[in-house]
Image 1 (cartoon, rainbow, N blue to C red):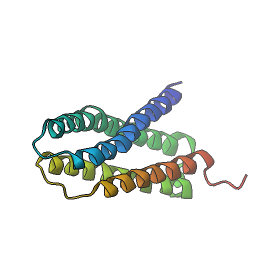
Image 2: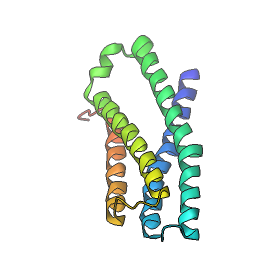
Image 3: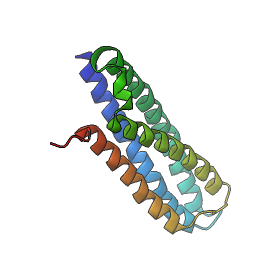
Image 4: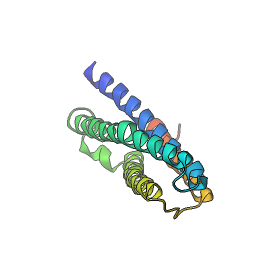
Length: 150
């Protein structure tokens, strides 16, 4: 029961974090076009700050803590530690590291936009949004199929 509850909470945290990872770059698309110092610029800054601090950061922390706990439990009690070297788990861990890096990159980009600098184009943010989805999709398929042939 506790294990299933932990899996469920992990999935909920992943959903919240994923929503933020997909929504923040979309906000950047529109923020990039807003005139610096305008009311719209300030509105985007506030939306982005709240999304990042109140949803994305807590969700990422929850994902890492619960994911680490699940990995520990699986290694110690269910699957043995060798599962960490399986293809699907290495894919998931690589994706998780990439998403954590991307999360921090988005945090820096948020501060750059708030400072009035537009270092990335609308097109960059649109494409990055799709790349993020691709990484997440690969991770989900790795976990759900475990790369089995059947």
